[in-house]
Length: 512
Image 1 (cartoon, one colour):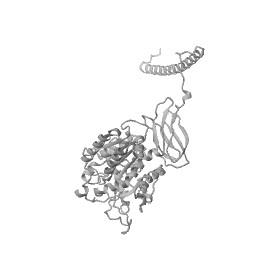
Image 2 (spheres, rainbow, N blue to C red; image 1 turned 120 degrees about the vertical axis):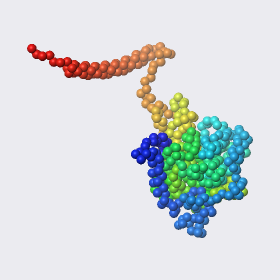
Image 3 (tube, rainbow, N blue to C red; image 1 turned 45 degrees about the vertical axis):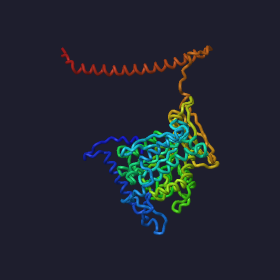
Image 4 (cartoon, one colour; image 1 turned 30 degrees about the vertical axis):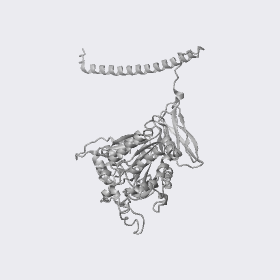
């Protein structure tokens, strides 16, 4: 869905119902009917392991614990369970304290507000935070679902670990010097405060984005403020990769999240190989995710697990060129706070390695015009039906690709008004650098005006000037001739019309 379609014009039908509301109602009605077929088999991502397995999915003795997608009753989060987790105000204070303590490598900013007006705070971590650099950007988003708070705690621990280990640990130093890391600990502060999945309007934010397969949520006014904030953030930023942290399972999930078939079936996106590589980076670095008996290697295609529509990761990939994973990092959605240190140790290496992968693999470079200006060109890989765009400010691009010794890729760069350039690159097990300089389109046909000042004094300048003026004279002659012809034609029609009118108005003389 293109965001240009969002500004739909509301036209009234005979029934007096706005067109956009009618369209939205029909879209949701059709998709809801389609979803009914999934009720007996769907597994809700972020499921509570205390719930019973779905009928027909797992036997009583099976270790797979899931909950129904349309479960009406959510588990009650007691004060005892919530104890030890930071409240929204405590989280905000912790972020401000971090920004003061680590001011040399960070800044704090807001991308918007929740339904109830709580700021959606982000921490940027980099050796030049807030400055434009030709470096990749990675973002972490936690607490998408209000009742899955582990991510918000682990992201604060990650930020502090990076600050404490800068210039001490090689990976921490690599990330801070070569990547702009943006951390949004909570996307859903209202849902967290209410201790439920949805936001203050009880909307599941991970079903609220425009969808690739069905015309859902394509009216901007119907989206939640948290969703709109993320969309604006992604479009204004230039993110290379991303991950959102969830709870209720233990698996790294990658696109596509849905399919046009509305059933559980593997649906590979164009960059399926790269996404599987990224998911394995996280799973293999985790303490026990790769040992999963439910998901081979601890990774899964979203549509194969169970399809969802209006998800955030698919929208990031389509509209932001951002390679996003959905990470289920805890079997229990809201575990006791005393388990957080263990969960941090289990996930720390995975989080660090995933961020570092954006500079350790893929193709990175810049695109310039012939005169040295950066260009926001599109970068395409032959055989992969997706593209990423270079930034409009610095012309830098960062194309995620799965590594592989001896793997050859054909890379093309294009921009309207410039000649497309294509080259072949041989990838190894590490990243590659590739810059482009684009020539203007049809530059041979552009007339060169002779230099009257700074004459070469050999007579060639005069000849060029005469030829140039002759060209202008010929063009002027053609234009004048056309105008004269049109004038005569117009005057002739006007004259004939006038004569005809006189014949009609003037009485005939009698003949003697």
